[in-house]
Image 1 (cartoon, rainbow, N blue to C red):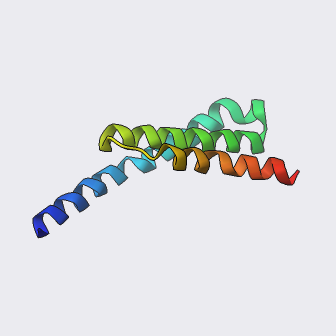
Image 2 (image 1 turned 90 degrees about the vertical axis):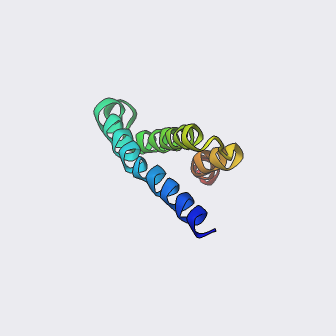
Length: 86
């Protein structure tokens, strides 16, 4: 039982190592390509949406599952709340 737990922890620790690279890549692409064209606020909103999608694909490829409704709401909720409050 302890070996299985260590195996699971090791697997998820390795999965987490890729996440900072996704974040850095996403931020770099945002700053280089579309912040000037879209403006700061919209570029951050779009970048957040893209980050959620990239992380979802990454987890789905490595883990084989993804909670698509949770991922969609995480990506869409800030934009929806911002538009409703306007």
